[in-house]
Image 1 (tube, one colour):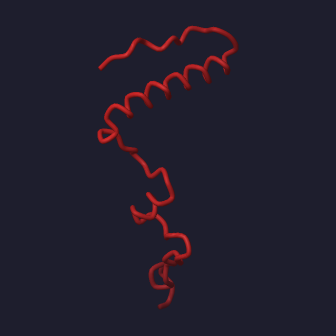
Image 2: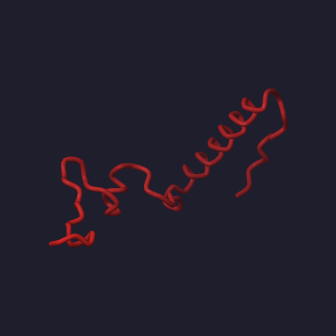
Image 3: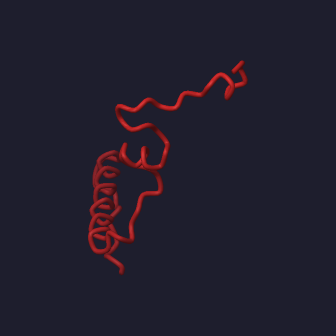
Length: 76
């Protein structure tokens, strides 16, 4: 599938143009994801629950695993 090109021509101040083109790109990606959401995924955890599921952090209300003295080279 191919959509028409996004107009990236200068139309005003640089920052405004960057914001406009970024938003247009986000709208295009949103439309593509809506067509086939099962084919899209994030390449990094996005939500806190993703980080918990990946084992990158403890769930809210749970204590994070603290390294023991033995694990960091100290006496056990």
